Image 1 (cartoon, rainbow, N blue to C red):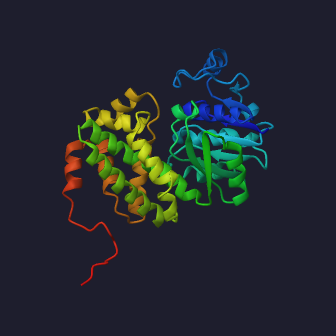
Image 2: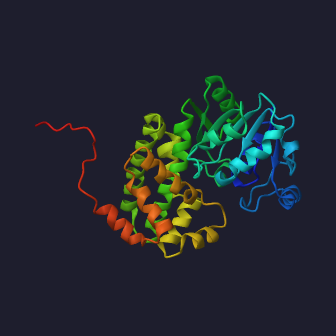
Image 3: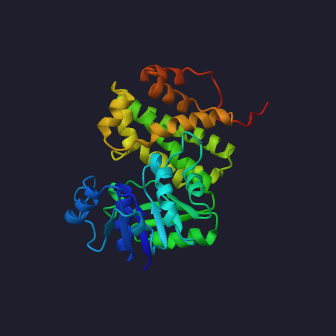
Amino acid sequence: MMNIGIIGAGTWGTALGILLCHNGHRVTIWSAFEEEIKTLNERREHHNLPGVTLPQDMAFTASMENIMGEKELLVLAVPSIYVRSTAKMMAPYYKAGQIVINVAKGIEDSTLMTLSQVIGEELPGASVAVLSGPSHAEEVSRGLPTTCVAGADKKDQAQFIQGIFMSPAFRVYTSPDVLGIELGGALKNVIALAAGIADGLGYGDNTKAALITRGIHEIARLGMAMGGAFETFNGLSGIGDLIVTCASVHSRNRRAGILIGKGYSTEEAMKEVRMVVEGVYSAKAAWKLAEKYQVSMPIVEQVNQVLFEGKEPAEAVLELMMRDKTSEMEMNLWKE
């Protein structure tokens, strides 16, 4: 049995807490909001996970000192925009040897750092790992079969995390490609916004398939330019996470995109979704990285123009369709 602290009482942190409790571990969940802690304690349910009962032995706290103390494993499950500020709060209580697993997905816009890099900067010397993949909280909390990938710099650490999270309903693979895993998890949210916009415009399955296929091509092209592995983008945190986020009714990025496609502004769509839409925050960073590494990312470019420059979604789609003719393969294999 491990003593595990989950920092963040959103749907994903709570779903992982349920999983870990069922795996026999002692779990405490932290929230910055006293009222939220009180509600979770008393009702034993999360308002965004209807029909799911929280384990009786799951504990809750609003004290950062309490959540950090005597914990062997820390799961950082706050939205990406709060990762740095939360890591700053963790710093005074961090103890050498504690493993920090980041499960948020995003890129810090101001620095273009991945979230594990942000955590490492705020918690110098900490062992930082990641857990990512196609894993909606609504399904994990109900015990539906799910697969993810644990990324860490050291093999034994990745295997340790694999053992902690593995269950009959939650299969975990390991990978040394922390950078690639994080880039895949962050960038797929931008493509999912595009998929949602297409749905909002009334386009069909052909359009969705095109966005997913060309989207993973853009993600892999940038990810590999930054040092990620090709296999990662063909794996769970790449194409796997992209498919589920572009197609699922649970996807807040797709939902926000649908509203934008129907004529909502970016701000109106985010307010309507009522949860953090990670893709909106990652879109600018993705485009900055594309420019920095001189990588062509036309879908990401058009998403940015729709989100932040007032471009009409239908015009963005037309511009994507009418780009210069090109080949699907970058290598020239024609027999002359």
